[in-house]
Image 1 (cartoon, helix red, strand yellow):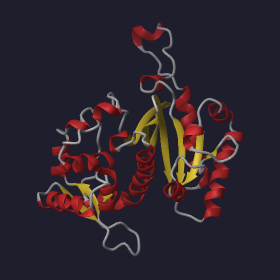
Image 2 (cartoon, one colour):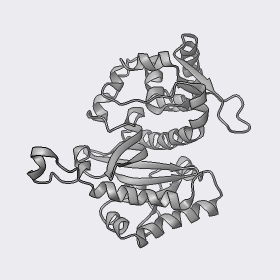
Image 3 (cartoon, rainbow, N blue to C red):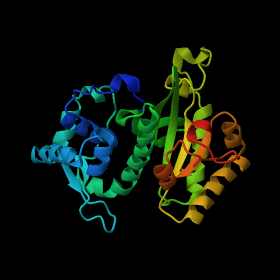
Length: 304
């Protein structure tokens, strides 16, 4: 599983002169699976769709990428692209991915198993990216790292669907924000989803234990301080069910905050929110579409 990269997103951002074919390969290494439309929105939204289509066709002809069909009715012409083993080897040398722990999908079988969830995660990223472009904020393809893993003790780990870096720009003021993003397609029970909050609360408190001669060293504080100056907020993005069912899942997340003492303490320190993916896509994530899990009126994710 991925760990947070040691460099900052700004140092990974490619120059505008970097060939689009390299950006497409890097994006598939980073995001694992994406449709042609997703890559168009992600990499060259001001160009025609044919521009990215030509690049993808050439990359497939050269053996770097392949595609599978998303398991959605009525989308027979949509192609979900992924790297071949040859393409995965090539991306290891791309500057934009230097220092990253990439685990690209490199077979049609693996792609078919993960397509639905992975594409939902990409949709969430694109909602934030489109909002950032509209507002003059900074959030691009390399500011969204899927499947980030952290130790939480007792031999266990928490794996976030994505870690997001986002810079909100207001004149001369630059506000750097981070978030763990959980994308729920209503494929697990509501209780299992809510248990994720306990795992994040454990990560917030977890301190790695010193061993050997260093056992007597004073504690260095929570382990997450190795990667983040401030603990990332936690955002749940819900889709794949009726509005009533999604509202019930939000209520179950709020109940976990109210009823579990560890999560309740965590919620007083870290912003927690939930939104419906389709609302974020239609109105933008900075609209009042996020329900604070600790209670209160819906608001922008930046104001949780």
